[in-house]
Length: 73
Image 1: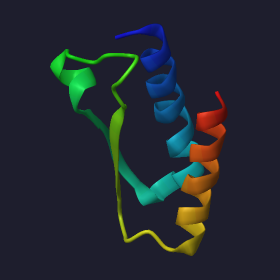
Image 2: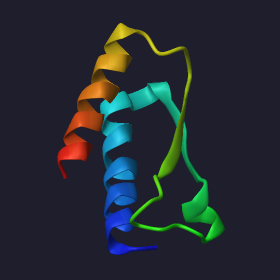
Image 3: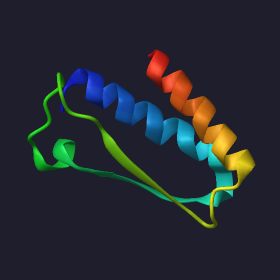
Image 4: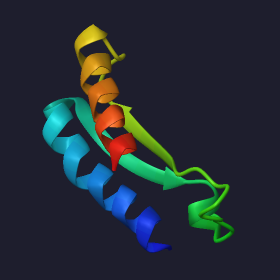
């Protein structure tokens, strides 16, 4: 895993639980980063967050704000 990918994944797994609390069931990493063919220049980082219920407006706003913060990094 590249240092950039590691930084993103670490930020996600440490931040999402604090933002979503008991709504969060688990966070799963999948895609090229898991399979070993990740290319920092062209690949995205696939992360799935499983929640206890559908995303409502409040949860969406929380995730949207976090995504914006992450993109700035």
